[in-house]
Length: 436
Image (cartoon, rainbow, N blue to C red):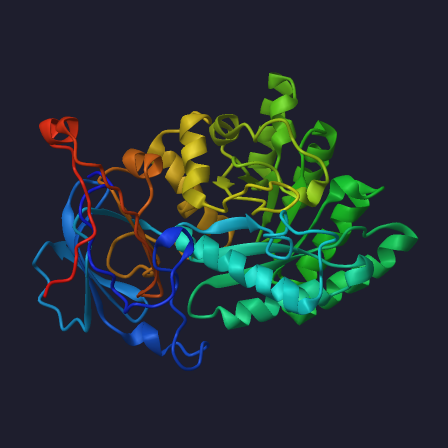
């Protein structure tokens, strides 16, 4: 169904306006940390699934309680959302964000890292990504240098303030971990984990001793039982081989990205590197919308997703930079990442969407989501009837986190009165004027 067909009423009361004129995320009433809203029963009526069925979906307790044919769930629902004309999907997740630097591209002068400024940026970025559909965000946060642990504390505070709206987790990203200069970085990395950073990251490519950097990261990750998420361009096959050999021993696991340099290697070398990563269980997060600023350089291409997938590497897609130095026009939109993988990366539309939903959630250690009873109620409804159409014209969206609607974006398309429009019976959505 075209996005230009009639929209349903908003499921939450009139309030603030989101970017683009649609209704933005509503702030929860009372204590933002209270999980009471999860107990509300919600009925999603008339949603279309990817297999073509039209169903009703009942949510409660933060999970999907039941899925049945339209009109078949006589539910004690306290709330109802009409999803006629919407495709219902597992919600995307954002596996590679940079909340501490987001939204800084248009600023004048040096970027401020005052804690209140970082917290504001991280919060606004997470809400923008939530509006796009991402109900979980993994944010890489630089630590060390003159800013110390201030940015990490600020993003952790943003995480606490957003509880109930979206799940924000942090990756501690030190600059150096080896040599005399790296000693302070390692101590600060350990402190960041104690503060609440749930993932250990960094850029081995930028350390004078990349192997030593990796050893330090894996040692600390093993000590604390943390996953690892590293930045690398992936253009050095020897370094990738060493990483795979060392990372295979770590559980819960290692993710690397954006790996655009793999696309610049000779094909046989790239195949060999992909086989090594697959054998070690190393995941790759690619950034189809452009590199981030963490590597302090821009890759010429995105990672070779089809080659990696053919080798058995689990590949997720992230957004990377959100209007910062890495990409001043970055949108932070998972559906755009999927669109690019489908239009330029050679993936079929369902595969491309899975890279920003199921694969992204897996990379972040989150539970699987299916539109079936018993699964977490982390859902995205997008106006349309097939994934390919959704990726092409993904304008109107309803986002559900922990069983409740947390964001809605409504697009309005109008055509002027003309003989052509009338003759072709083009769909037109107008704003309904209030009655007398």
